[in-house]
Image (cartoon, rainbow, N blue to C red; front, side, top):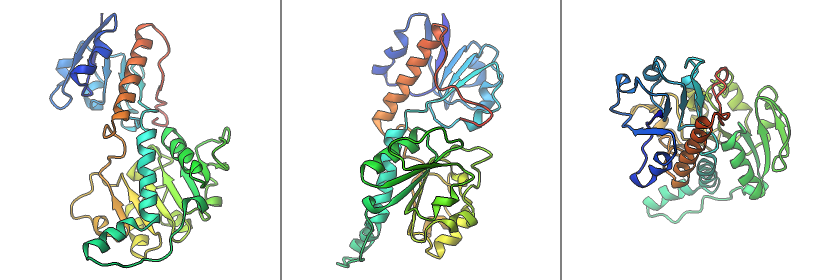
Length: 312
């Protein structure tokens, strides 16, 4: 029997997804309470336990993450297979991103403030998605899902990725990190769904932020480190952009006294666009777990293998 520990919360009525698998000896654990000495016989762990806890486990052969991001596990020893949950988050996070775009583009947050003042004021003309250009920086599952939806709404969509292999039919043109500045100044929406790598840390500093179109909308659902926070503060205080929607920040969590909280046209959510806030995401993560576990027990190649050199 293969000893498997599940560190992601699984409801009682879903546990048979794993306990019914022949050859699997499954234990469900509370990740907030478990200790390394409780896991000495673990061959497989499903869920995001701290690297410091799992890296020296003597029997561990495979760690399956419940997140798409895996940058904090790059130092996991090479003899331990590492896989992520890429593919589970695109649906929910892309809808969150669309909500952010419409909120800013249609002045909905500003109208909510006006409502609180009991005023009946027209804030003037607004843009439409169907006449907008959108730049998706990061074209994994999340960025591609957002790009498809924005294309379906009539936007002209451009994509950015590390290497350009092909251009999907829902994208007008693809760019790399090195040449995205050629298009960024034309775009009404710039959406970041990047993992944290050496290439992406502080990718959006003051210089690049100012290359964006004045009045554009910035959305970040990847990692807060992609944006230099002090530089964003500076340009938002100038009202250079019409809105910055941040589901991730640097630092994170954002301290209560941080000036970003009260900066005009900055909209912050506490890293909730993904996770398990949407039931569909939770179902997809569990299905990835089960499918990969069956691969493992049948000595088949695992899906969603993480490239430790880039962190995803």
